[in-house]
Image (cartoon, rainbow, N blue to C red; front, side, top):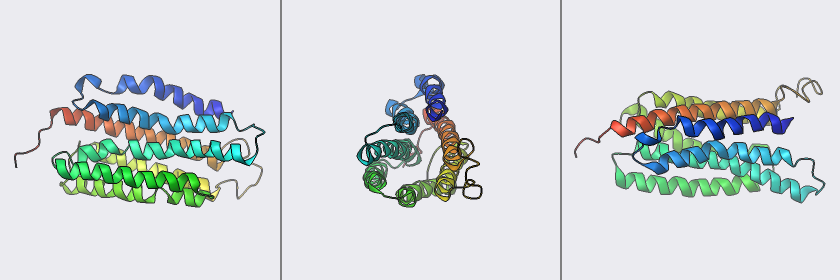
Amino acid sequence: MAVLFLGIPLLCFLVLLPLSIPWSQINVTWLGVVHFLACLSPEVGSVLYHLFMNHEGGAPVYRTLLSLDMFGVCMVNTLGALPIVYVTLLCYPSIRNVALLAYILLSTYGVYCAITARSNVRRLRSFAWQALFRFFLFMLRWSGVGTGSPSSLRHFLTMDFLAMLGGIINISRIPERFRPGLFDYWCNSHQIMHVLVVVSIVFLHWGMVEDLLWLNNYRCPPE
């Protein structure tokens, strides 16, 4: 049931996202490719994790599957933000390159922390620095220092809010902590988290499509 629950969004993303990315209007092709991979990665990791959950390999196999699941989440946090960094600092090439490198290094550390964490709380904390980095970029856009489509910022803020909310619900075990046994099959915190993550990816996609279309027509002011 869990595989079906997660497999449907994966198939939809796999088929529909490439059709909705304006490839013919993208000047920087890698932005679209990286964005597409970012949207797929958490769903691929989750499907693999749940598909093989009935294994009999014990703790080592479980930890491997969990690492794959967390790696997918890390990839959407990493790859999903790189185009945002690029667009936000479009008119500052030197700073943009440093920021891209810094975010990649920060994300590498976050991946290590998330994969080696032994509790859900620590896994959620692993993404804190990436979230703060993105929030700083959003502040640059809001203040007018950074660039990007005027309508994309609200999508990105909604994306991060939903993702954070899903993580908090997952580690707090709401609602099943209040009615043990009632939510074993439906509407438990883990399922709610997955739904919120899928919706957050949709908002990421909407925001990035806005940015890609904006990028095609924008020219940085002369220095």
